[in-house]
Amino acid sequence: MDKWDIIIIGAGNGGLAAAATAATAGKTVLVLEKHNVPGGFATSFVRGRFEFEASLHELCGFGKNEGEGGTRKLFDELGISNRIAWADVPEAYRVISTSSGNPVDAAMPFGVEAYIDKMEKYVPGSRPSMEKLFALAKDVSDATAFMGTIEKYDFEVIKTILKEHLNFVRTAPYSVNDVLAALEVPKKAQDIFTAYWCYLGADCGNLSFIHYMSMVYSYLTLGAVVPKGRSHDMSLALASVVEKNSGEIWYNSTVTKILSDGGKITGVELADGKKVYSGHIICNCSPNTAYARLLDADMVPQSALKRANARKFGARGFNVFLGLNRSAQELGIKDYSVFIYGTSDSREQFRHMCDLDGNDGQATVCLNLADSDCSPEGTCILYMTSLFFDDVWAKVRPENYVKTKRAVAAKMIADYEAKTGVKIKEHIEEIEIAAPMTYARYTDAPQGTIYGYLAEDWDGVVPRTMMEDADNDIAGLRFAGGWGTQLSGYSSAFTSGHDAAVQTIKDIEKEVGTNE
Image 1 (tube, rainbow, N blue to C red):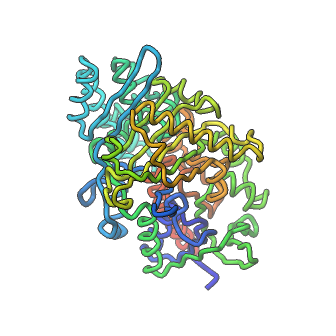
Image 2 (image 1 turned 90 degrees about the horizontal axis):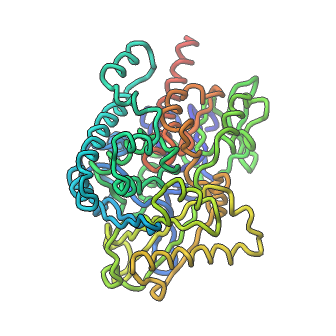
Image 3 (image 1 turned 120 degrees about the vertical axis):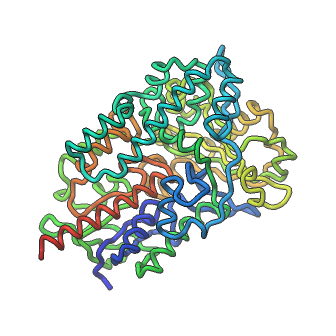
């Protein structure tokens, strides 16, 4: 078969969710994946006797019951929620900042009431402002849920938003820092509350309050989970949905060109010269990659080029994977997830993360505290992540690359030991280091970014949602994954793929209606 309803380039989270959604809707679907396994970032690898998770720290807001949380709803719809063994993340996070004059060390729980109670212990007098903050968060969450039901913004929809979701409108233009200051949240409480900013890929002076609050509220109310079989279990489950619904996934199949004729998308060409055809393509890679390498220049409107060039790439990933020859209990590791910052000022920390030598931020996870069986008995696994918000690794000369990445990894290990008091260096049995070049090579992510485009105030969730139609510059081509409306992250990538498939199915139905 060489003619399909929809061709999907890339079997990452977004591509697999798009393929599964379209296949279950009865469309003929072909997924083309350059690797020999599905998943993209959602995969694992083995070193010695340890199986390491490549990227997932936790799946936020999944929920414990059917229909809870956006990702849970999607997985329920596709019939895979109960096919994956889940482990609950035990607590929200710990944040440590040793900035001069304003140190922070706080371990925070799940549950809004428990969170506010704990905050009051750390910051006496913070309760009134935190209660106002979470009441506002509930309003924003309700509004966000309503936005998800909107197919077209018209007068009646705008009227409903202004009448029933006014707090969404009031906060939409403002950053996290703006709203926290307006609510008079004490500075130390702000420092504790904003710990999660690095996972959303922008500092709190530029990060949309609605984006951050929607994520944190879902996270605290629904908790978080990790798949016991690593994120690859999710990839395999989605792939099986595609194949059981008569879709196909071709592995070791690199797309080298998106074909067109007369200004219309017609299919793709593979590295081996084979051509397959469809008038509808969902691309699970960056627009920059598609525009520069896959499409003929005359197929890319100037508006698309200008938009892609105006956007900045988000955080580039740097990870240290550690297999330790002692258990978490023996080592004294008590925190599943700990954020370590040189400063609690996210804007200053962001600047640190634009410097190869000055980067002193990390997020470190001990998977065993959620899944005790994830490594051999008497051992544990640590995942250390640091982010770089500039292409500083491009300045490293090839002959210095190995030495440099080892030095960065050694600094992260030393910082973790110094800030937590837990000694791990002498217990390292396996170590693997992934620099931005690793991610660029494996996923084709430009400059090794793991967060798509930078979530700046002018290009955050709200403006992207309002301008979603404008992003579809090329008829027959849509994008899925971390480059879309909801920005990067596991949950948002799944949602992005689902939405791209739904919109593509509507495109097909419109074409059928026009031709009848």
